[in-house]
Image (cartoon, rainbow over all chains, first blue to last red; front, side):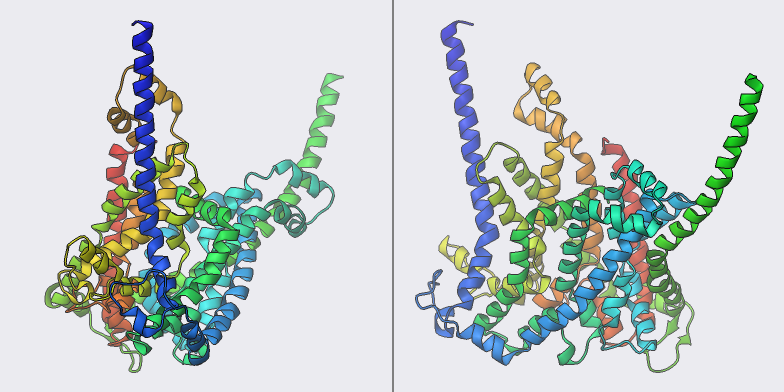
Length: 288
Length: 310
């Protein structure tokens, strides 16, 4: 191969790489637009007066921005009460559930006793059971306990610690050196003391991730509240929002304003804790 | 002398062992105590209700009158009399068409992102955002997008010269609409999983292929695909299980209509349990579906062994 030829070959290869990159960018930008335009459309609709919503060709950026849809959602609907109800449910449920899951994860990761790994395997295997099988009997049991139309069915089961959280936290706690724990034992620390003074501080990143995921799951839960809550004053945010479909049928400005309000806390949390969200979801994803 | 030392050490060792035994006993107790809550939770809120539901599935039970044992009647009705049940099974399988589509699309995006690209975190955020959003808000949004006269999708189609169908009010188009929305919503999670898999492919393999003069497709076919097959397998299993139990977005988007064309099997189960108060029949349905899900999971694992390279 002559020197000339070689440079030509190099140039063509570089050109090919450039074209490849250009195509990737075009493809990714189109993809990102497909993902983002719906959200933009939601925001845009929520800021338009009814007349402008049904105007063709559509205005992507509203000619006249109005806040009336938001004002009406806040004053007419139960959205604020729904938000408060949601917080009343998810904060204690997530906090207690996380504590229980973390203790169990410590028990599975660092303590030795007969049958430990077998029990762990069984607990993980239960995640394979289709959740649908428990929906009806759980409802009957909670009805017999008199828990219908209360927050209890949405809180108490979660407080025992869910297997997926135990699994995730155990993975993380396994990486904490056992020497540290042995040293603490020699210093006379109790097992619970070891948990509080060593596991919790060292496992903080994993605990934060699980806490965020727990809050997110609770905040977004629709099925649980749908089955268990009947009175409008007990509705969670998602139930209130779902009821907009019937109340406001084709008042899309109001429906979109409600959706924007419901998404704001999630989106803010997502931007602040993006790393935790993605890590948490992929880690339980990849290794589940 | 050496034997004396040996005896001494053995006594020492025994002492330590006794001490250790007591310590271990304590460790057992604390260990069991710590792991008890999630196990208790599982027994109370999953195992007992499940066993109970086996019994309910053999009864007629409307929540108000005592359950009446009817033997296999619910199952007989399910398999031989209820055509709607089979229609909802078909609908559920139809909706699952979105799984391979979504997997292919998310793999393409992940490949696009798996190079030195500017603004990678921005792209990642854009694709991932729907994953964290509530089903209710997202579905209401898409209900508006699918609006036949003023919805974004038909406006877009009109602008390229296509008259869009009346998506959600058409028996033919309601399910494709649900598939489009499902693929859109699921891209982000699968993309992130694929991206992680692509990043862990051994670069030496590509270098070796370059030396052998392999082209891009050959590298993709013989290096990338086999290397990421565990992730493909994982996504396939979890997506299948999720798709078989999917119903909330159907409820909000179409309420299962028009004419049951988007009633999924779990939606039908939900209607039976909480609208028609047929707890026994709904439980029988749950068990049939649960067993189908288990069988699919097992098949997935068996088939997976053939093409998954760990």
